[in-house]
Length: 243
Image (cartoon, rainbow, N blue to C red; front, side):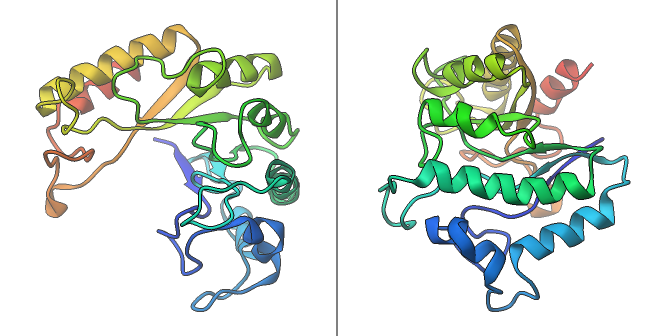
């Protein structure tokens, strides 16, 4: 087992800073200690990477889960220089990671579906950074085996990454049992996962992680949600495709 270490979350689920707006990516990540925290994000990254840089259990560092440069969480508006702001952030923090640890891989952590800062060719420009080793996509498009087309989505991002010579992995894949005709039970959902794994491997995806594991004490697999628990047939799919 290897771990993708997620160093913070865009949505504020893992820290006291809340949603990361474009101002956070401009400067607050390195200049402000949020209430309830002990250091800036940048200082925290340095501390964690130094502590675990020699660990064989680390597969990769992920800078921000689902990084994007929106004006605010409530607004979907993108600022004109959002792509540059995100690239500068990755160059700075990713550069710090690589200066400390040149053994492990690094991913930005993007969804990859035309968010602020990674629209179209901006995705390729971001992942062209020499500190970035992995391209990443989050796939919640249940009806499509390989989401998108030549202009958007996973298909477009795969093409960008082929040009860069970098591997693509799906850092999150989720199928809700609420999806009509697609996942009416955990068994049907497992079949959907199997079909998507097969199709995405054929076009070049190197690996996939399912969203999300919930242990038995917390309820395990729950309909009609994304969560996967002990005994879920989706685990058999993961096992088969991990051989």
